[in-house]
Image (tube, rainbow, N blue to C red; front, side):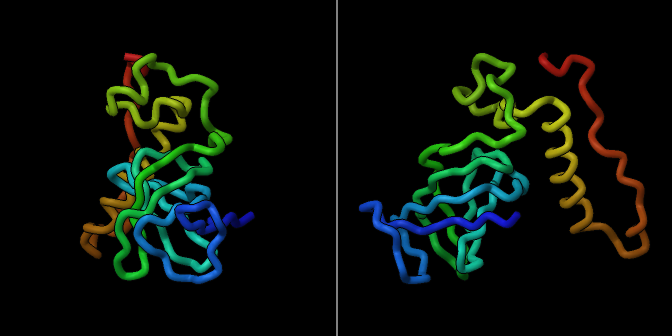
Length: 147
């Protein structure tokens, strides 16, 4: 199932034009998160919007603050719907306040999986062709995940 975002003007009216503009409010579902903590949404017209502090699967509202080369960057206004993979409550009582625990609302296995995807993508981007068949060993879990 492919979910696409919609674009609204600052007044809340749905826009019919395709061009993304600074100050617009967009809504969409975070498809994936790139390092470092950049959630990616795809709008109905195929354009991408980058927003920090999100988790894959969250439906979010974003205020666009920069548009370049058909890609927008925005500030998270609110999480409209939690991701299906999120916990009811984060493990740490300070999650969301201190900024160091962006993925605390995910189960620990989900945190490791998300981080492993990000690290592998970074390594794949710089690996030499003769090493392309390397074994990626993933992320080693902490002996005390709740610290």
